[in-house]
Image (cartoon, rainbow, N blue to C red; front, side, top):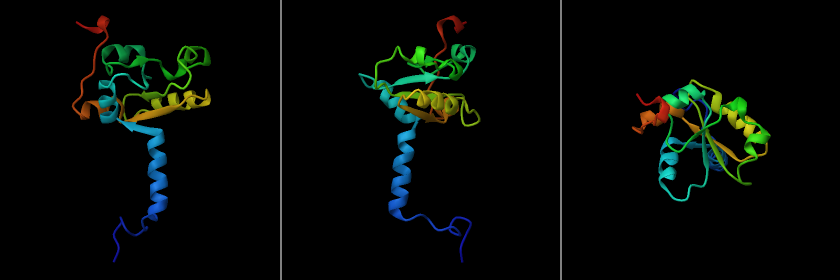
Length: 136
């Protein structure tokens, strides 16, 4: 007897290994970003692709705000060659980070998506930082 889980057999171990290793070249998670932001020096640039208004209301400390539509070759040329970018948006219900990742990849830049976005960040118990002008 099989269940919904096993009615389609699991992939062979070597195929699963390739899949999950490849997945981690494209994604990172909130915990790893948080831990890495605590390290010195930082080896990536964290980009919040949401609107400037949402960024001002609260963002991950250390992130910069570049909405995906503003990721141009000219704008990104200001970063050193080989910079790894990590993009995030509001959460799993938002595809802005995917759009940002596509733009950066089309520019030939190394990019990862922070899975979970702001929702995942808050779920981990981490806090957002309001921009100075957004502080009451």
